[in-house]
Length: 201
Image (cartoon, rainbow, N blue to C red; front, side):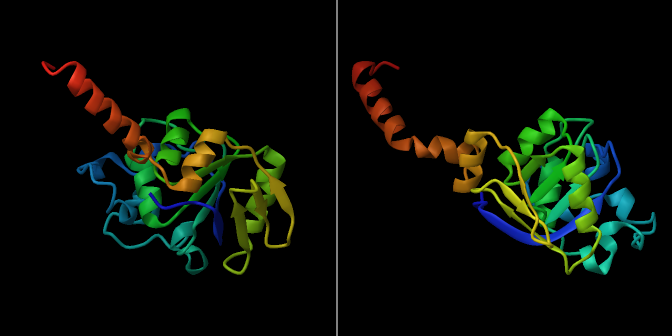
């Protein structure tokens, strides 16, 4: 998993509330357990007409937001089913940070496991960032995980909270497998000792 330290990028405004995981990645596309390849279907029913043509008014289809790496979303982002394909699709599209006033618990935790930083802010601060995102591609935000700060395009700084352990995992690029591999020396020592003490196992 790629390390997350400081991100400076375009933020796409998505003020819609209750964006659920079926809107993020419709169930028709849940045909693989690979983490890649889902980005093209992110927000599929919102991005495309039934004939496959783009819906021009959808934010990620607008020229200024096609390369967005941050989403500033409405309340209760990631609600609905617990499908891990939702953060897979977001990450595969290139989005590394989602900001909202609240997230569904399972989606929130799955983000950290897939290299995405979900940030929870009070409504007033979220509104400020939404307005900043609406300025377009020239209004780049900076998200500094180490300092736990978001800097708007105008230089205003907003602090955010993040769990210490989850912060460590993102900074080091550690998913669940990576966390296990950090302990490989201790695991090897245990296995060797266990094999000597209990050869019948």
